[in-house]
Length: 289
Image (cartoon, rainbow, N blue to C red; front, side):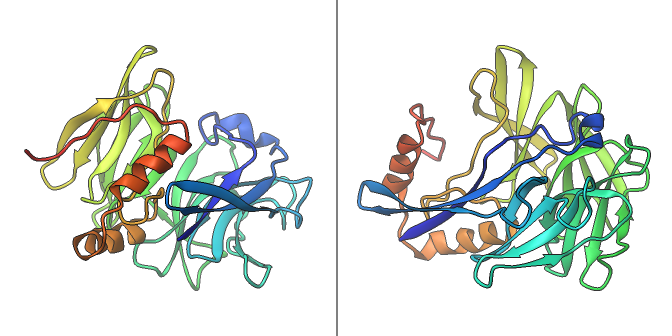
């Protein structure tokens, strides 16, 4: 089985410092194809993807299918970030947002009818969450009128969303777009927000510079639990699916994989090999029994 992953040359602490986007940095995007046969991983191909904007800002890529991805770019408006869709098969671009402000962190809406972004308003300080449906890519609708310091986010369902709020101490907040109500859960979190196969939110809780934990939050029970201790100085982590033996971030993919793991081969061995090849050497197994 061949897995296709996407990597950005530069990691930017995007949206953590509001003034960072006064001058958008020049960043490049590459795609790496690799495959595994048994226990052997091999590099197949490296493709340069940002030739359409070689000296501009191209960042925060997110796959929305096997051959399509969203990314933040100033391709159509120099110095202002917009969301574009890149079709890897036809090698075409589509401009997805055209607001007067800059849009970052694109993600498909869970219902499949559009996309969401973090927008930096014209004052250069206010950071808000917006949703664009298939007919309103030039305007969009602001979500959570009372929240103006959002840094990162992750959809938990079609109406529930986890948000990383500024300033320090960074706060995990859970909101419902139908009611417009949001509530703080815990302070001192890391920027990485992901959803596991059970629908729980995973995040990093920073105790101090030397101690931090990866924790889960259950939306139904409103409870958090410690999963394991995180690496010192690390805020980021990945979820490896035991169906594909590769990282997965899309809520829709997670739902499909949750079903497939019941009736498909569980690729536990391949998952461990994948992590070993990526220099992950410490493992903590959590399960019943």
